Amino acid sequence: MERISTVSAMQARAKALRLNGRRIGLIPTMGYLHEGHLSLIDEAKKYSDITVLSIFVNPAQFAPNEDYNNYPGDIERDISLAEKRGVDIVFYPSVEEMYPDKQLTWINVETITEVLCGANREGHFRGVSTVVTKLFNIVKPHVAVFGQKDAQQAAVIQKMVDDLNMDVMIHIASIVREPDGLAMSSRNIRLTPEDRKNAVILSQVLFRAKEGILKGESIHSVLAAAIKDIQAVAHAELEYIEARSYPDLEPMTDFNNDLLIALATHFGNVRLIDNILIEKSS
Image 1 (cartoon, rainbow, N blue to C red):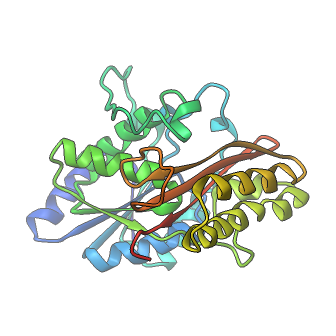
Image 2 (image 1 turned 90 degrees about the horizontal axis):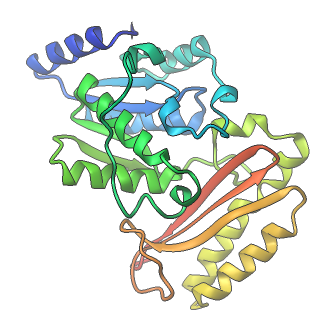
């Protein structure tokens, strides 16, 4: 497995791979890998000859009051896990390598970045879209794999790719969950034992909401029940739970299209997100 830490070296390697007819798959991550990330590697292998895992905690997508400085990281652990999973190249640039000068150029996807997580995280998706564009220009992937746990991010990236005619296929992989249902996240390690136990409420309310919707219950009633259940849990501070069409993220009051129920909840200073996608055909 190759390790590459500079933009110029990664660009040169990607150019050579493309000239040799190799198909590149990119898995963008912020590190501290878990089985959710590793499952994305497996997905990327289905669509590519060479897999590139990027590890970069992007400061541009964190607000000043968010957890950038406390975001977990262990690069040697991550590289070891990636190698065991069969990654071909790990690209792990520094902040100075990715942002050598003051950034004056930004990618801003409108409208769908202003709801859900974007409503309370000003500039977050601008940072995400910009760094993903940079990664696409550096790694030159044919396909990039993202996880459905970040469903809004996936929708934003797909819209960016479509609008800007980027020559890369976006593949969205299913959420990977812990045995008790909690969506895997690098932030889970920061939960206290009590909060870790209580955090299972997030997946529970989503599964119950899906069951209710498929039984014909109203969106309003399943959301009201979910809010009540989360608010009853110690230390859980609900930021939002909403029903949106997917992938255009319009508000939904009736189940007449593919439906995303997404939520964000704080346990102390740990912010967790989760969602469930209910397809109209299901």
